[in-house]
Length: 284
Length: 309
Image (cartoon, rainbow over all chains, first blue to last red; front, side, top):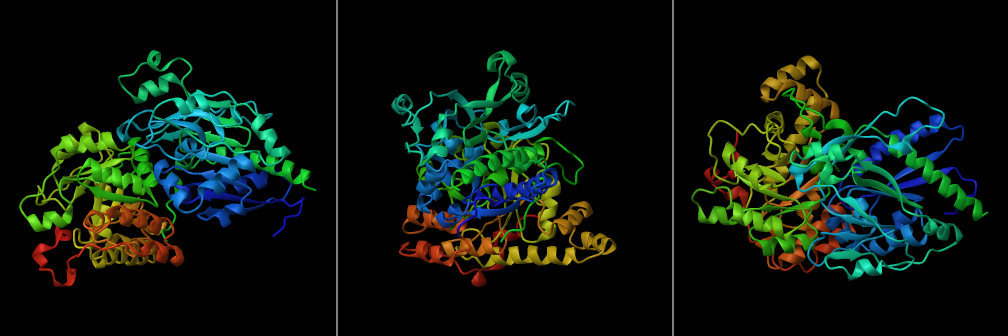
């Protein structure tokens, strides 16, 4: 199936090996119709649950949902999906968004994994700390200010984004940009790293030139409120990093898929369209 | 295949007690969907389960098959043993409390388990009352045989439901019966007018508002897993195709010949439940399944599913 360079059809996949994939499909459905209403171009969207390499190959962009990252990683490996996922993210450099477990899988380095470590996909030069806030009784909700949701030209204050953190990871360190694997990270004990891959073409190479951008932080006091014993001083004024982007890869440590709010999905679709159109223009 | 559970559904329940914790409690259950939760009795089994790809483990002293065999009173497990399991694996750890035994629940919450199963597999501690679950910070999962029972547990604050099935038998027939009953009752409720729903709520002893919501959604308003008698990858996929969101496996894994292999196979089967080719592949050479007890020949008094009210 060849797509015309001018095609306005986009296939958005949601990795459906385990976890809250249905929730992402529902919010994508909501976001695509809002997106179309706001644009003159009549975009066509196909939403796809992805369980096989063949389904993945049909996708222009992918969401890796919340779930258990060890389960998703093991099932991916046994379903012949791990390498195709790495190619998708790191060789073809297609748009990918991970939430919670997805953030862990898309990181180049991760802490506090199960004994014997776990396989990562990689794509983001960051180190994540799994279950950063603790166990389920430390899970919480918080209202976030997300600057990237700002609508150009609209002056009124942004509506806060109600977010849910469940046994959530955070980005504990932005790593130096690397083409190969994160060597210093690999030498640390109890830290796992993702294998390196070479980008396929110019568009993909451009994506790896990008720096890691911090897209959102959890304000120290919000975190302190969730844990009665912690104070703002303990967690630092700046707060934990809970959303990052590097080129084609975006990740959040919280679950926008557990709210009825599709604004982040809508924003991300815009990013997907930009990257796919760039690629389609090159391939004419 | 499971009917979609709307994303913003996690904000309250029939008690009118819209604790902000409800979205967080139901949220973890959503993260477990499409996964397998395995019964384990020690840290070593927990590691096998984690390596097999379990989405969570249920820590207990004896698997249901042994509870049946040994008889006596089955209680909450030693918190020390549960803590060891919590320290050994990074996936969520659940633990069981007796029906109505709210102090066991307080203890489990105090040691920080991720989910409490108020379970009929243990000997009930209260002949009439279930635990009032909403005030706990730790979320609860409860068993059901039918829609009324499921909605009563949700109204008490359960953030996740499972079929009761018949634990420790390796016979899936009761889990199928319970899931089919819930499905049929939801289908009936869906076709009813509001007046009829009021009467139906009385018939099945369910809170009206929750029944109405269920009828609108066309499914239970929380995540719903299969449990009780699942022993093979085919059993697990059967429950998924009947509409469950995921599967608990109790005795089925560690009472079989090759636990690690069977556990992996069941995990693959739950992901690829609609792909018979994958199911055939993972079902091969699994070694011996648990021997099992035929539920049809079991004396009524031996059935655990009858516990709970």
